[in-house]
Every structure is written in C-alpha cells, then in structure tokens.
Length: 424
Image (cartoon, rainbow, N blue to C red; front, side, top):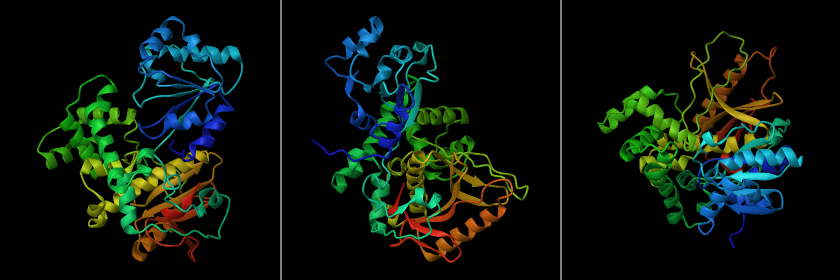
C-alpha cells in the first residue's frame, strides 16, 4: 500500500471538524482531497463505487438518511452525484447536535445547486486544498519556518539543495501527489494528462456546455504566457488572435476563464489595499495564475530543458510555483496571499496577510545577486510607503529565491530565502 505523505491540510481539517458539523473539501482534481479525508474518517461512503453507484443515487432520493449512518467523522466521497445529500447532512448536523460529523469531498465539478435548498451556514465549513507544496513533497528541507518569521525570528539556519536543473523539473512536474513518487519521465506526463483531461472533458462538465477543445487550448496557452500579469480578458482575446490567427471575443474568453476557475484550474491573486503615506492609486485587478505551474508548462508544450534555456519564462513559472506554496502555508496560518501594484509602478509579488493583522512582504526572484538586490530595494521602497500610524509595520521583508544554498538576513534586514528550505 502506498505510504501517505502528510499534508498541511491534515491539521486544518482536524481543526475545522472541531468547530463545525460538516467540512466540505474543495480543490482541483488529483490534488489529494479524498486521500486526505480518508486519514481522519471513521467510515466512508464512496458514492461513485461502480457496483453501488446507481443504488446510492436512488437511495439518496428515497431515504438519504440511510446513507449517512456510520461512525463519525463519516466521509461522503463524490457527494455531488447526489446533491440532495447536502440538505440531509445539514438536517442531521442540526438534530445530532454534535460537531465533526461529516467530511464531503468530490470532483472539482460543482454540484447542481437547484437540488439544494439551504446554504449550510453555521453547519458547514469549507477547506480548499491545492497541489503539494515543495515542503509536502519533501523537496524542501524545511529549514526556515514562515510561522517563526511572523513571530519575530531573525536567526536563519536554512539550507537548500535544489539545483537550477532540479528546480526546472519541479516546476514542470508540479505538486500532484500521484507524480511525486514516480520516476522523472513518468512524473512529467502527469501534468500533461491533467491538461488533456481539462481540455477534453472537465471544462465541459462545469455547465454541461460543449466547448471547442482547440479554443480551450488557445486560451490556456495565452493564460500561461500571462502568468503573473494583471491582464484583462480583452488582452487575452487579443493575444489569442495574434499568436494563433483565430479569434475569441471577450465574452467567450470570460466564460471559458470562469469555467476554469470553477474547477480550480486557475486561481487568480487579489490585490492588497494597505494604508499608505502617499495618495498613490492602487491597481485593483487580480493577477493571473494557474493553481499549479505544471499546468502552464503543459499548456505551452515545454519541458525542463526549455525553461533552463529561457530564464524569462522560467522566472514567470517559478513565481507561479512560489504563489502555490505560499497559499498552502498561508492557509495553515489563517492568512491570505495578495499582490500589490500601484500607478507609480511600485510592486510587491506577494503579501501574506494574517487575520491577526500581521503581514509580510515578499518579492520572488529566480536567483542571482543582481535580482536579489532589485528585490530588496523594491521591498524597502514598499515598506516606506506604508503608513505605520494606521497599520502595523511588516513582520518581515523577504526575497524568495529559486537558487541559492543558504537562507540569510541581509544587513538591511531583508531575508533572502530559497524556496527549497521554506515551510509553514
């Protein structure tokens, strides 16, 4: 039996079950939702078991309560096959009067909400899972704790053993649990298989509207070219036309992007809105990202060697990898990840803002002394713009790098930390 790799979501799920009657785990297909839920479940109902699927669906119509019997927490996998289970679970949670009763998982395709009469407020809580961070896949040594930085840690002792070639492979492989233990050539196939499934099947299942596979490919390729950019749908439409000699209007682009968002293929980064000393107008557009860099790699049809030979593209996709990992870590710290950009050209690639008001500013650079110096300079300029009379000063300034053997603190106080030694 394949050994389970501990996920950061494990502890989040445990905590959420202590506070609500039911937890719904959402996230992209293949990211490990069911496997993670199985670790804590005392009984399991697999709705899509081929031998029992029709019987389970029929029972959900006739007597859904019977499907909910079993030791708790009870896992209901692929619950969206029987949307009426939602209201049945809500009813059970109300009448049992106990917490931690159910965990729901399913494919990324949304359930038919016409079958649901209650939102679940007060009974359900949501947990978003993403592909594995480098720490979860054991590709990061975990020598530097993000939590410790927020708590004021200044002495760093982290080391990274990720070479530039290995980093290129990790960007292309992605954080898919199934791929982590495979030999390299086979592992790289997994993201391409995921991409093909999205193009030919998953995107159509969102709204049961058949979409043109070639148009989906063109859009995802354009999205990949614009990773880390704040581009509107009109620009994506123009990019598709210029690069593929075929047009997609803005409305079609918007509908396709919305479908990709619903199945957690894309997850854009919202803008951060701090209190500033100046009156600089803050850009509020979201920054475009896939949920995992390997999807962009598959959409572009490239591999590790291509990235090493094109450091500009490598840098953009490395940024996507870092945003993925920072989101995973922020979830465990009760925080969110944002970006910042204003009309004066001041930028910050990532801002982790916790519920307690603490925040850290992060610039993402592939590596090299010149880029690190640029990142540190930008962070200090960003710090100077913040009105600390109205909000806290940042807990830390960090240049997050792809290359480099050691984590360290510069004389100006900026941390330089390789992604290969970062953890929660």
